[in-house]
Amino acid sequence: MLHQSSDGPHSPKSPLKKPLSRRSYSRTLAKLSILALVSIFLVAYGRGLIWLKADTPALDPQEVNILQSLCNLRPDNPRIHEDNSIDTLQELIKPIHLLPEVSPDTTIPADTWKDLPTKGVLYMIVQNSKLYSAREAIRSIEDRFNHKYHYPWVLLNSQHFTADFRKYASMATKAPIYFGKIDPDTWSYPPFIDVARAERNMGVLGGTNLYKGGSLSFRQEARYHAGLFFHHTLFQNVDYVWRVESDSQYTCDLVDFDPFKEMKENNRTIGFALTSKDVPRAILGLWKVTRAFIDDYAQTVVSPDESIMPWIVDRRGEYNTCHMVSSFEVVDLAFYRSPSYQRYFEYLDRSGGFFYGRWGDGPVKSIAAAMFLKRDQIQYFKNVGYSHGMFSHCPFQENYSEHCSCSLDETFDFKDNSCTVDLLNLVNRTIIHEMADYAKLVVDKNTSIKKRL
Image 1 (cartoon, rainbow, N blue to C red):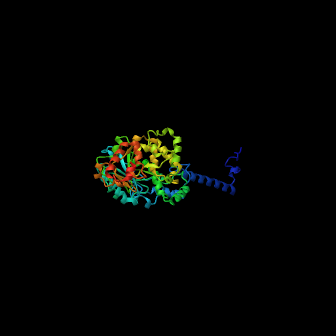
Image 2: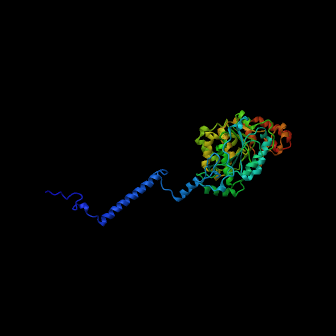
Image 3: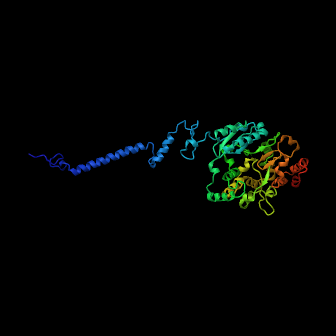
């Protein structure tokens, strides 16, 4: 009888029937542990993909805290507006006490000018500490002119305006008024300025009797006026600006006269009432840089026979420092926005002269007008009575005297430092005769006036 083989898998003689050794058992347990750890990792990793991309680096605890704080912003936080937008902050988290009491204005509604002949704006750069002088200047223009028209006001500040400033400045006018914040990047040192050099130069000029020789804020404001203010969003729909200084006074009623309308109807580009000479050491380097610009961009410069260039250049071809006083000016913003003007401003700005020197915006704008404008684009506002610091202008029309509180004896136009008569000799000789005739009637004994005429 044949026997069934005992070599099957269940045979006592099969190798697989041998009991597992301690080493084999440990190896098997280790493999199972590794498989379990891999499984746990894959599950956790898969869940993480729901909110974190696979290639996103790990966040450190500080980043986690920042993200958590942003997620926890509540509707009552001042940084969130009614439209659910969040202010763009200079830092991710801004301390509450540094936030403005009232958010600055950024735009002027288009219908603001619906009843006006042109899109004109009265604008002022002013600090919170100048509230009372700002109110006086606003009130002066409102009483003399704007109460009949209600042209909007734009007030700009390198600080945030306080609620009190906005409240009391608004009470000085019935016209719309907007309060803007100057972008710090356009106010502070640009990246190409050597700050140490600028501060050294300010220290040197500050040790002299040069007006504002050591003032950083003067340089910042002059530079901003010269080529940056019109980039502010509040001016994006504006065609003409009338600059107002916070401590200025307007001394004559503008009887049936609108400077904005005058500019538009007569295709004028820049309007002035006063001229002056600057102190040469204040504008060191300005003409040298300008000459280099003219050499590089000669094709953009108007012929001297058609421009006011002869007014600003002496017989040696040097700048005589004459300029239109810019503390009162009415300007078509198309001029400042033009490629030629912006190219010239950038050329000057990159030279550093606004900070290394003490360049004022008046000479810069007047030189630009001499390069890029024709004579018939310059407007002389003979009817505007104006006073600001050492400067004053009083109209020469006899029928205007009853509407003015200024004195012709005190007008700056006949001072030795004035350049007005020479400029009018190029842009409007008729006015010179009017000035002479009236001056003879009123101040016949004033030999200094006779000499200038």
